[in-house]
Length: 295
Ligand SMILES: Nc1nc(=O)c2c([nH]1)NC[C@@H]1CN(c3ccc(C(=O)N[C@@H](CCC(=O)O)C(=O)O)cc3)C=[N+]21
Image (cartoon, rainbow, N blue to C red; front, side, top):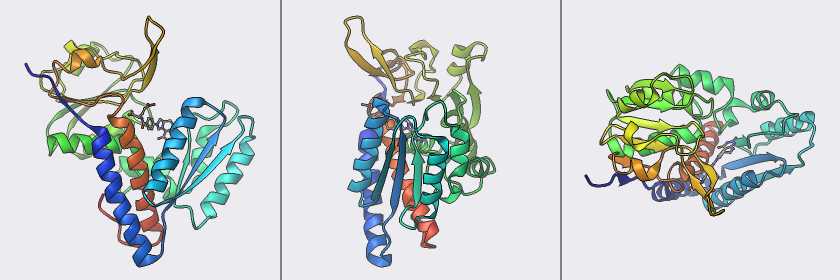
């Protein structure tokens, strides 16, 4: 059998960002409004610093305003909440993202709930979680939204397909399941206590892997020809000491069985950032009562 088609998240996200940049230009020319994204990072976690820098770069490239707030790891919770209140009231800020995870002394749920739901470009506020669950217009979390865009690009309509989401987190698994239900898939959410996980996964036309365990999903768990979206980003050390980025799927095995698969890196990761910009553009349009671009 021939190898699976590689789903190119770098290419898709680059095209999406180009489209977004055109809408930003149009908004600026016709309405004198520039979408603005505020990113809050608390602490010095090196991986988070890299992500936040990439977000800043992509935001500016798309013609949007980027407001970076980097706070020391020991910043009191009260100060983070005060910063968010300021961003909620700032007319130049249309999107607010607080980089997770936060230091342990800060209650992340409290911080998320402090964000104005109309500026909650991560889609983590309970208002947006509820709206998505109810099938109402919502800010949709970026990673599931990007994953859905890739799935629709590969498969067209998803109605009637069997989808298995492995992982039940609030940031990926649960919202992903909601989106797939809305697309009329038959959705199973599997997790660490699922019995016969390989068998469950083998029923799926669509597999979304979001467990955070390196290469857990094996090639022989997959139905031949299925579509695999690998959300995992795990840094592992090889026996020779070199470091490598791998997903939650054993790629070398899976590529022999699947019909299409996202690589890591270059799959879902870049889509997450492009969707963050997309959500910021949409939030900006809504806040200014402009036509909301269909992107
Ligand atoms: N409030 C919040 N919202 C987030 O969306 C959020 C967060 N917190 N905390 C951390 C995670 C992680 N995340 C990624 C974004 C892009 C890539 C990405 O672009 N990855 C590239 C490069 C990977 C690399 O080389 O490190 C790729 O997969 O090809 C990865 C991971 C967003 N996150």
